[in-house]
Image (tube, rainbow, N blue to C red; front, top):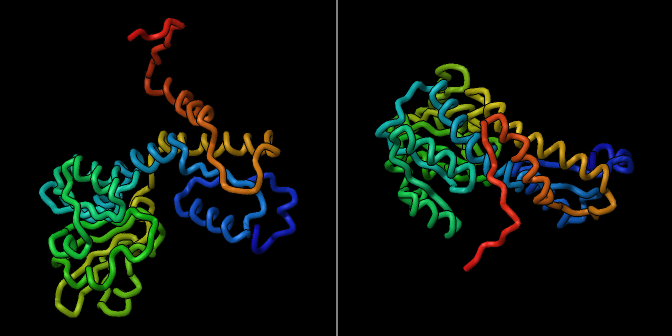
Length: 277
């Protein structure tokens, strides 16, 4: 709308965005003065980032990998690029299936968290030589590139669950390796050194390309955030100047509360009596 149909912006009261990549773009637009309406960053709602990103990916990652390859995870060295909420879910998934998990990170806090969960934390340069299954989760670019491919073991599996197809440099493989399509969304590349790299979903989101994405329950959390954000922007648009905002905590809690009954959860209620020391 901003670039192709700017005339429609007059009737737009706001935008709600729930993907990490989309939110990054909104912040960039705002910094550059290109954002013309208020936006709510749904991605950073607790009931989105800590549920969709973590619990959703924890289940859908291996659903995609197993549908595509039928590989056994137990005993394999599994490399997770990034330890944000998505990376945390992926690392937990590999660990739960008996994988030996290595994490790569740029953030010292995330790296410390990974180490204290028992994961080895090192660079992709080092992990490339020993990993057997690789997944990128960062929302950034060039996480796995030429210098990593040439170090990998024969038939290493590479996939992405982060940002479209730019985290894994599939373009370099297409230009510099012989490609054989094994089956839908599974390509095997032969490098000049004789080793092979198996790429899933052409480097795009493996849980969507090779499976059906997150389960409906966790997506209900995310979409409820979207609905409440849209209602908030429509009914209280004067409270939101042009910029990128987060959903109020009260509405975040409402999203969680709406999903408790389905799981049979009963909340304990505080009494007016204060705690004493």
